[in-house]
Image 1 (spheres, rainbow, N blue to C red):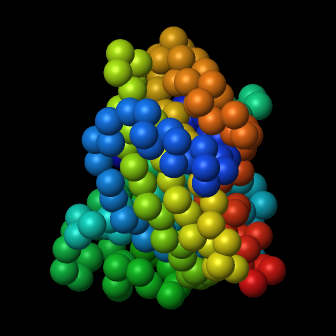
Image 2 (image 1 turned 180 degrees about the horizontal axis):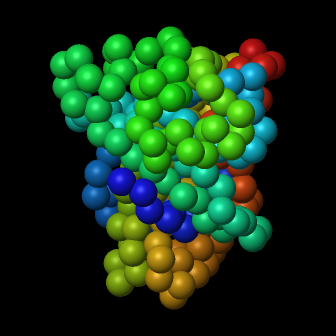
Length: 201
């Protein structure tokens, strides 16, 4: 499945993160494990992410996120997703393989862009753990609040807004800026944060 994702992201202080959690209804909380793949950091250098995400016992999801455009804190990404069934997937030898042969083990919609980058094989480069809260703001919409644990031991707090509706997007961004005074617009992906932490760890 492929779709366009319109996202605005803010980096938060821990204080502002906790404050936002108290200002709405927490609709859900999920523990996520993101396992990342790259080839000599070609994906990270092009702001592209390929990951397998595990979440609370659900089937893992293989995702390729490709940059389309960005303006300030707002990014548009093409996201291609494939759910990996439980048991032994027919596509990959395990649910988090060490190495992936792009042409032989990935569907065509994943391969096309990776070939453009000159990537034929992907290596597992590591993983991060993320706690995600979905915060419902009455009469506006929802904000995803993330607490990300990086390989160097640091913790990053983020607020993410994903909506195709311009009014909803702007209103939620204004809400974050109003109630999280230290919020800073961020165009850095979780994978790019992982890469920086992994290199310096």
